[in-house]
Image 1 (tube, rainbow, N blue to C red):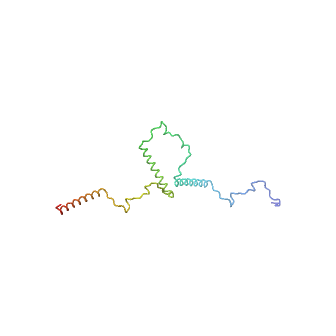
Image 2: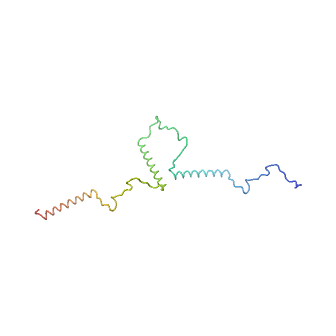
Image 3: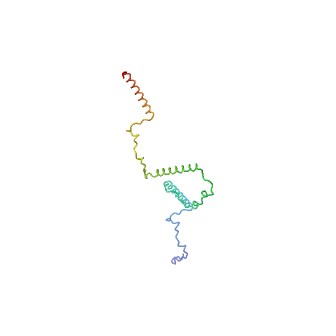
Amino acid sequence: YMHPEVGVTATDGAAFGRNYFSRPSAPEVEDVEEAEERALVLAEAAALKKSAVDYMHPEVGITTTDGACFGRNYFGRASAAEMEDDEFADERAEVLEEAAALKKLAMDYMHPEVGVTATDGAAFGRNYFSRPSAPEVEDVEEAEERALVLAEAAALKKSAVDYMHPEV
């Protein structure tokens, strides 16, 4: 203080440090609670994205590498108890067939750009029976009624001829 011309000497390295964390231009640092909350939100968003992808693309299927999936089959061994009845097996096969048909229907609905392909010859045929210019087809009752009326008309004609020409 008495001799300002001497200057200040310092040998401590911490005396010359700059505070990079509390300066006005420093980026904001989130605390531990905010970091945990952000990680939780990002994990939930990733799970939602996976669910959305699974829903929108059922053709991808499911893959697993879990070791428990490759375990021993206790049901197919020789000493295993008898499996389900034939009725249940048939019903299960029906249910699986319906599920496969529903899956195909869902694929057709979710992907209309695929289009429809038909190779059945009957799909390109022409209906000759229900077109407007088709002749009317009578059923069995109408045919029997018509035959009866014609038989009666023939009998009346014969009676009229016999009455009008008694000489014959």
